[in-house]
Image (cartoon, rainbow over all chains, first blue to last red; front, side):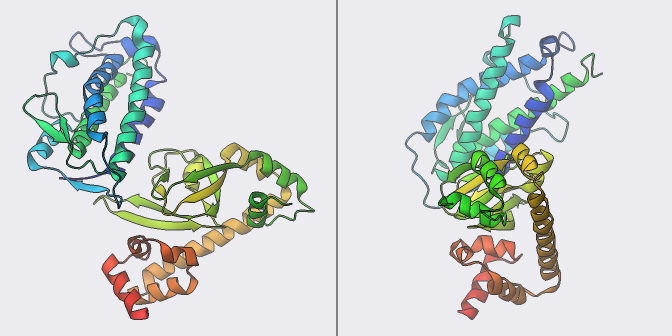
Length: 187
Length: 193
């Protein structure tokens, strides 16, 4: 699998558009509403994305720190086959989320009513940082730098970590749209 | 006028410094100057274009990324020319294209609401009609070239009208713009040189 950082940036910007047009318009009540006992609410999905980023951000910061400017911008990078498989397993297929997955306990969201705004604000902040990683990956030599994953035995290289995080986020955007679709006002 | 930025903009909009003082005063107040390093993205695909630009310095490429991850160059902008992703700017939709500074660039921009207000001046309405007529004719001519000319003919036609700043940018951008491989572009260039 190859990734193109500009293509990732374009896809990442589409998530921002979804946030602006689909999530920010929801009332607090809708954000907190769970479709059923087993499902997350919209704000819980977003909190889960924040928790994921909480884990990866320091690791990505570490990987980018001290990375030299590339002599020539590089936009396309090949990923290792094993990591490509991991990425493909989390990526949504159109509007479907294949391969049901169990979330690690430390990624399980927990949002009190008073924290809704804080969670949204944090997510918006993280989105800006993530897009900056994608832009920096074009111009800084980070292709072989290592980012430990949430599973101890597996590590990513920076382009793999960025693609993984984006695919994971896209998967949850599909989930988020499924929740919005069954909210009382939208159903 | 004694203001290089305003002189550039007056030239671009074909304004007369003595007759169109009101329009120039409006522009002086509203123009936003932005600078970009070489290879910096001016506008990202997936985001809305916020400005209609006039280029003071530098070269910029407008391109999209196709399904295979390749850049498809649609247009260039350079000193004295307009720049920006116009459809995104006008319709306030997410841009499908990137705009990248290929050289260090200085751009003077005007926001959409200011652009609409600017076009309320009669002199600007006339400019707008001429401007878009020229754009349309230019795009039609490019379409005819792409559909009917051989690679060599496309290269020759481009070189004949190519603004000098474009000759200094990486060949792969020019090759993509002319819908040929960088290798073909390089071969045609060496034949001509």
